[in-house]
Length: 107
Length: 118
Image (cartoon, rainbow over all chains, first blue to last red):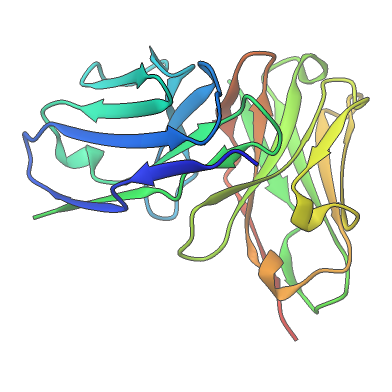
């Protein structure tokens, strides 16, 4: 199975920060990586699809990038509504696999 | 407006069965694959199973293979997950989500809680 190693597991952040979360794929998954935001008690929301594409309705301060097997989600100028859990997903191969998640907390 | 509405969860004893449903609306259901994803309390997301647009192909994670069956009724725009021989480790919120050819996870249901306990 493809492992998606996500880091950090948690991050203490301040409003206005630039935040970067990374997932490293254990095998080639090409562009088939999505990023999801999840708030407590809510369903996941897709933020980035195919590694670098901004999903509909997602603010432009979110961006996705890829460098080899490393996939990153960056939030520029963090706003209070961005404090949430974030998950990466590879869907290139079955079983599809998620990263372990990153929890953003305000300092 | 795309909507996915899960139902059928609740409390079930270990070893028993439960069937989840996901009613879809707002898009042509028969054009899309569908998937189930679960999340144990305080844990991360875990992919469970995927079914192709016509039901001809199904995929499962190893821990549910042989116990869970994903299926669909395109005439009713409904996705199902039949869960047999349930274990305590199956306790989770189960979400249905849409799967396109090159896309996945663009729409999610609200989730349904399954608790396996005696």
